[in-house]
Image (cartoon, rainbow, N blue to C red; front, side, top):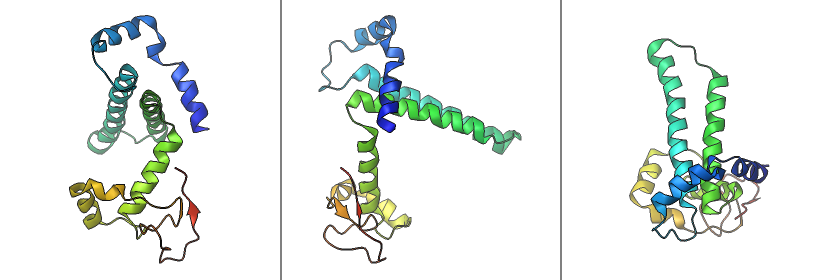
Length: 161
């Protein structure tokens, strides 16, 4: 479903409009980007920041100005964020399945006890290479140990690359 959404979202991108594409291409024409669709990546990244700001604005108005908190408004903003994330993923030539699998691997390594730890979070900020430690495709999602089971006794789950 995520990949179907990605194809659909790419088809309705503003960057399919010739005028918009020409403006962004003029800006980027002389730069090498190693196969990355830079105008689409910029569109995705800038749009994501804007939509996240709109989401935060809604929460800010609730907290400090007495507005009602609307899950429906936040759901729409999250959808917009997701759309722009798809723009960025498409620009990079990666699927959302890849994005999710990469995030799961990172979190499994960072939090092997399958709960948040301030110390482990701060250690990861100081040593990002620690999160590149490989884990087997078949492992307990709770374990950062490449060749051992999780101490919680959870059944092994296949983590797709």
